[in-house]
Amino acid sequence: MVKRTLLAVLAHPDDESFGPGGTLARYAAEGVDVHIVIATDGVAGSVVESFQGELEQLTAIRTKELEAAVAILGGTLHMLCYRDSGYINDPANEHPDAFIQADEQEVTGRIVQLIRELQPQVIMTHDETGGYFHPDHIMCWKVTTAAFHAAGDGSQFSDIGQEPYQPEKLYYTAFSNRWVRFAIFMIRLRGKDPTQWGRNQDIDLTRVGVDSDKITTAIDYRKYWDVKLLAGAQHTSQGGGTSFNRLLPKWLQKQIFGRETFMRAYPPALNGQREKDLF
Ligand SMILES: [Zn+2]
Image 1 (cartoon, rainbow, N blue to C red):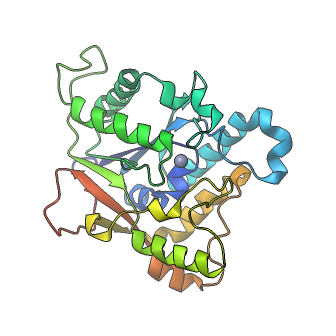
Image 2 (tube, rainbow, N blue to C red):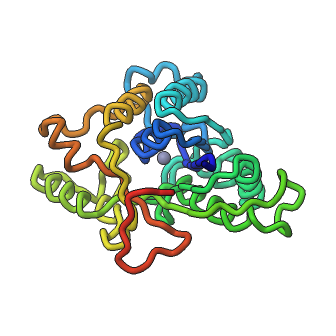
């Protein structure tokens, strides 16, 4: 049997766990060679109170947290080590080392090199909205999509890596706005404003999520529910993501949220097609 390899290109230390962590854990457990590329150092992300005194070591702290999380998920980590650009209008956007200031060709080339070396059948990255319009997520979408199409073309990046190699499938992470609409309803019910959400009140939840008819692929990760939680819990400098829904019993949470969803970008999905496997 051909060795199955999955390459995920994600923006920040934590996206691998809070994003498609269940899917990554499941494929790793099923014997797939899972490679996780993280583009930035996460230095502009939010920091919980107890870590405020250690901001200078933040890059080192986030790297350690990421290494622990990826080990739990069962993948191999590749860090591109760009500086976190921060969210829209964050002054960190302007930093010369910020990921979004990097030369797109150069970043694309680095991903092409990884694709040619690792020869994954499946590539995964953020969607064109970055999920919630984070500039680093959108940059990942841009360069990974370009790399997916360039890696198999010997006339492009001919000085990079080995032989050209064309991966078979490209997926974008996506979550249905069905759940976002429900969350917005609950937030309004509590008298809060869903257009100014998150720790910095800079996320407009009403623009988050994709229409459920655009979702092509749902991966059941209920067996790896605890693995995903444990990986997320490694990111203690960001709070570890444990606040999620204590009101619902675990079995019900699994039932409702135990699938991660994706849009297949290549090959284009047939109308209404729904699949349960990335390979
Ligand atoms: Zn992120």
